[in-house]
Length: 253
View 1 (cartoon, rainbow, N blue to C red):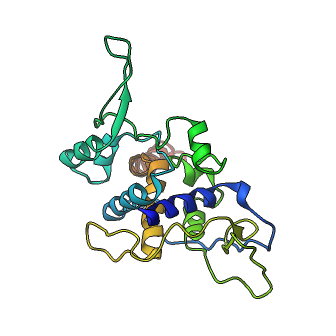
View 2: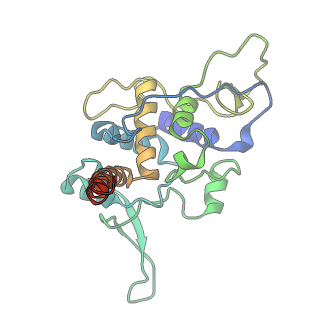
View 3: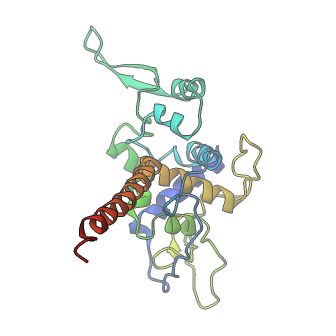
């Protein structure tokens, strides 16, 4: 529980610009290889499911996914039964009932992800005044996208000898200013993957980044499929128009 809470707070500070401190020049974010990049890129279902597990066990204590419904998890490979079980494990505030009062009930597949806090004031109070950002679109909201988020999560290094790290701060190679007020949210074997994959920091960072890339752009695969079909259509149409042009102008030439 303590490890999970520490991880949640770490991710909060990673995504909050208010915790920077000008200690050095931020390193350039290295490009990563992602299965969902490129014209024919797709999301890896096993990675998406592992990424959801990392989010659920490490991040969800502070960060919401208000734009995602539990039924959307079926799109990443969870069965209908699994989706219902995940939703039912959550408590949703609903109402009003016939008496005009709000009430609590188990979650349904149609519900959106339950927020970890009832309101912004409660969220700030629980996080030393900082409001933990919603992660639904975080990959799109940060320059560098998936590469930046992955690098940030794995960017905790030993500080350079010339860099003085104040007490209560931590050195992160890719964070603006390279000093951050919270420790790394990920640690070796921080989660026990359901598919028995080794939960290294690199693996967890890659999986949760993939999951958050999907929440930011769940239509990516269908959009690419449509794009490929359109390109094929245009290529065929161009060929047909060229053939017609040759036929019409053949006698003139």
